[in-house]
Image (cartoon, rainbow, N blue to C red):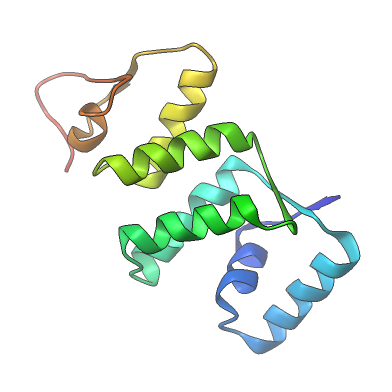
Length: 133
């Protein structure tokens, strides 16, 4: 098994650059399944939502697809599934849900946050009077 960085995963998902998509597919065929770390997953989801303007449901669908695809081995898939469930049930961003899921699995709750949306999720606690979003 080898690992993939953010751009390799994005090329495999989006196929928006023919040469890079072919190279990424060849890498997957020769080295797969590809390990996807939490950092890479969070970056991929940020790029999809912020740069490519995918909606929340699309982001959730991509995470679900990565969990179900044999070609990818996600870091701590139970935490990713937990983050996916939280993302679908809240207004919090996926990366924030992933941070919360990791903290939950580490037994390190509550997760302190200034983020208003994340602060509404069970296991998170808003800190201080000023909040983001």
